[in-house]
Length: 150
Image 1 (tube, rainbow, N blue to C red):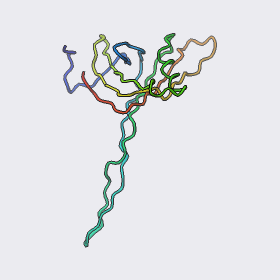
Image 2: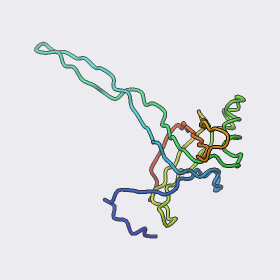
Image 3: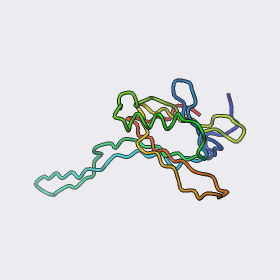
Image 4: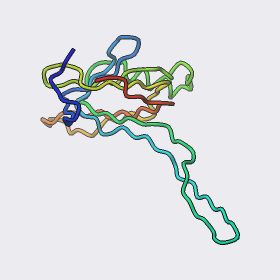
């Protein structure tokens, strides 16, 4: 299915979702970031003529995904985080999809997160009687993240 985007067009998204086992557990209005990182390691070698200093790839840090949304009444995200808090790490580690949707509801990017779990769940501040939306931020950590399709 074509989204009408050229492969060189910048992606825009109106909505983001997390899907586990074909079921959308949460929808978000903001993707704060996807982070993958490999720590550089210093490497020294020498021969008779010179000392050679290099930076080489070292240990990979676990990928993280940070998402924000207006707090909803759904309990799926909270229950997932609770399983981590209670020490049920094996049960909490879920492979899931992060899908980015365009303004017309079509998927524009999909990422596969293997063995993901919510390491942080933050509910923002809100004053009684205020008109702003209560925001919820979740940080997902996973073993591997892969861009799988548009």
